[in-house]
Amino acid sequence: MECDIDESCVKPKDARPSMEACGIDVFKTVRNNGFEIEFLEHRNEYVKYFGLLLID
Image (cartoon, rainbow, N blue to C red; front, side):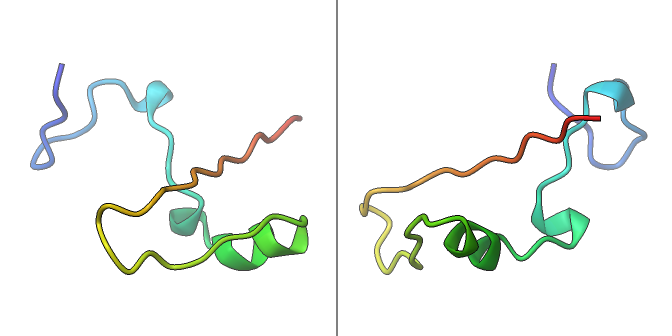
């Protein structure tokens, strides 16, 4: 099922906002935790993905 950006979310409990949307400076957070991250200059460069796990 594709999301319709003009309508309300049909599965709001499954929605996962990006770290940036939550006000997190991803580059600073990644670097503060000892990982390397750089801006990509070309679309064919190797991409690193970072995620965040919050435990309550």
